[in-house]
Length: 431
Image (cartoon, rainbow, N blue to C red; front, side, top):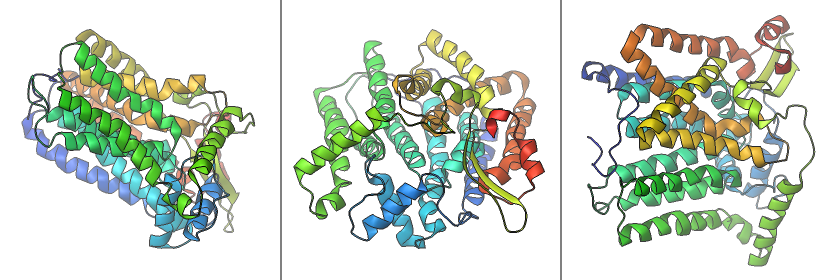
């Protein structure tokens, strides 16, 4: 089904031939199963809390015990509530702490597929986007640790997908169709969940407003007064309500509204004044280049082998995606193609905000920009496929999959020799 004329924009690549669409649909099911099969096994290794799990998992314990949360008070509570749900489902152990993140990581693959299909109306781009997300090392590792970043990334992309579903549901030159505003409220609820996970999501969410402004300015979208009221309710009232709901356990423990306000101020002051460094911190500009990954854990196991967890992107994907996104941005700007510009602006807004943050930063802060990166890459791969055939693209995807297979031991704490780990460290800065 084509987009209505009021928002119809040329996609970045020609649609895939219909004869291969059923195969690509089957492929995305396989990709999702693959994402689950590599994420869920061995969640219990290591069996102890690693890196920031010592804050988030312990805070989840305190929430379940009805205690005052003292372990992690620098971010809103939603990620800790989600981890607490994992503990309820699977026990107070490593599997329980990490299970929600693994679920979120698999769902992110599906959501990116749906968003790509909405943006480009191309089964190949959608399937390739899902595959690239499933093969990425940073997404994989963040799906297997009790930290908030995989949750906030999922919520962001649910919000983006619901927003584009709203645009899809609009009849040409008129207000939104009956029921279309439901998608706006879903987008607003997801946006509220993202902000209730980390405040840094406020900036990447602004790509929705930028997209609306561009569509209105170019005459490709019309909004009735009713639409505007729904937009205001969906993106102001709903996120505020969701944010406050995540503080219900806080208020149940007897805190007042004044204490809530003071707590918000203390969170802001903590991050604004944080100057402490860390051995694995890295400059924001270095993230796409993969100059400094993060070792979440490294130890010698009892069997004489070494086990480690390193948060690192798939360089086969990231290093190709940088020039691909630049080319994609040029085509998007020339055509003024709104879906394409949404991807480019989404990446830029999610990424460049960190140029203005002075506290210690880490590679995982780049996670919300990664799906935008692969969306642009997948669109360029579709162009390559149309011009030179599927063989080159298939070889590239197999190379990306080969990287994940080769690095799987140091992404998942699988016991291997120290020599093998050394061979995987391509640069001294990776150690």
